Length: 237
Image 1 (spheres, rainbow, N blue to C red):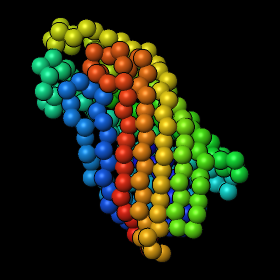
Image 2: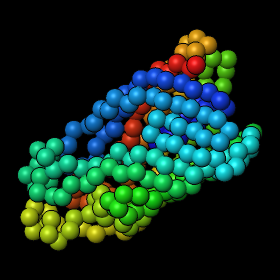
Image 3: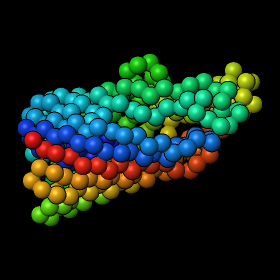
Image 4: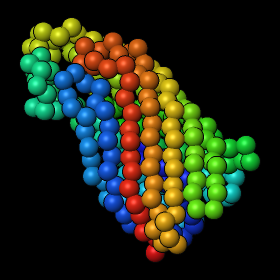
C-alpha cells in the first residue's frame, strides 16, 4: 500500500525525504491496532524508483504506460507473544515478508488502471497476491485528491499461512483447524496531498478493506474489515 500512494506523487528525477505514521487495524483476535513510524524516502527517475516500502525498475515508461519489476515489504504478521488470548498464544508465528513481481499502470484522461502481481520471496507463505484498482485524480493548484476502488486476490498459500490453523496448532490451542482457499477482497481508497511550499508537502492516505469470507471465517480473526491510515510530510530536494 505504501508504494501505491507514492506512485501518484512521484515525478521524474525527484528525491524527497520525510516522516510519517501508519495505523493499521489488526484483524487477529485480541490484538491491538498497530502504529508504525515510517521514514519516507522517495526517489523517481526514468529507470528506477524507491517509495519507502517499495522499489522497482521500469521496463517500459511513458506518459500512458508504466511497466515495472517491483519489490515491496509486506508488514502483515502475527506474534503469539503479543496476544492476550490464551488460545492465540499457542499458535505459530506468522512473519512479515518481502514480495516481488510485476506492476503495470495505464494512464488516461478518464483515470488510471493500476495492477500489481507479487509473490513471497522469503519462503514464509509461498503465497501470491494480485491487485487491480481504478483511480481518478482531482488536482488544483496546491492540492490533489485521488479516490480509488480495487480488489485484491490472495492465493490459497497466502491465506493458509496468515489465517489458517494447522492440525498441530488446533491440538495445542483448542481452536478449530482451518484451511482456507484463495480469496478476493474489495477495498476503497482515498489519497490526498497538499503543497505547503515549493519544497514541503503533506499527504494522507486511507484504505478500507472488507475482509473476504475465507479470512473472516478463520478462528484467528474476529473482525470483518481492516484498513490503513497513513499520513506525513515530505521535503523535495
